[in-house]
Length: 388
Ligand SMILES: *Cc1c(COP(=O)(O)O)cnc(C)c1O
Image: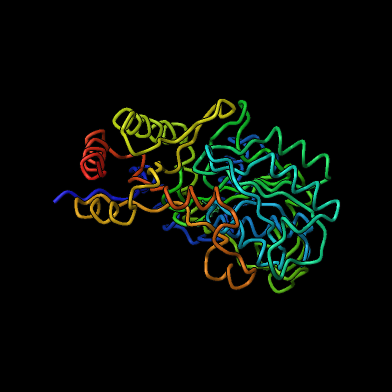
């Protein structure tokens, strides 16, 4: 029976040799590969500093600290994301304040973002704060997410940030290589974060990178990822309370090798997305992804379609699975995750667009190594199983 994988990394012989080369040496951590990977990534994106870490989540956490955010402080962000963008704030007891999303892109709605920043600044907090545990600190930052590989609306976000003196932390974990008005994702805030889990555009197994042009922040994050050892500290002296967020040398070697063909990897994903679009266009009952004109380069992370609200998603998902086609609801809203409901008292209906997209979205099997035959098969099964 046919069985299509949900996602697959694209690993070639050079990737394998790169990892083998490292494992034959005694230096498996804190070596030259991490430095080389950081330099290559900084050059690729066009940032002064890149700090490699062992996950995207770890990277986001370090940016929250390096941005100077304190417990109780408030950060405007989106509930339509992977939980890590919120959890990185919660690790520091920072309060995420949610703004609903644009129904087309799933990225933070900038009209509502502007309103939220204005209201919070003027003490009109009712509409925006969670029902409980809302913190008592100041509004300090915006944390937009480049959802599914499409950059958020940074012209507006930049304006709002300047007007209200807010730091911007860009969660670009799904968008390595994407461009907004020809500028690369990750460069739109003081910090940008990328992730390299095996379903991302490039992989290191587990891993992530923070980019910034701020040297002081970069130095701090390098210390924090390495158990708080500042420059000059010895192995057992720790200037800061830090973390073990180090990326190992094997992972970094894989990252260097993957990054050397990142444009090819992104193009292959684009090819697969275009096959999906070709085979699904004008299919009744579904909506295809919307790419806005400001997105001068989409960096496809997942291929998410939206079902008509009349379609029973769970039933469809079960029928697709029977034909060897795995699909995933994408995203389940963060504010409705059990731990968020318990902590902040969120309810159904609080962020209607996020909930609607969350209820209707399914990610189809997707990777850069899918063949057109596989895409055709998925589309064929989908059309056959769609009701009506
Ligand atoms: C993948 C991802 C992350 C980071 O994930 P890790 O598994 O920690 O590397 C963060 N935010 C978003 C939106 C993501 O998709």
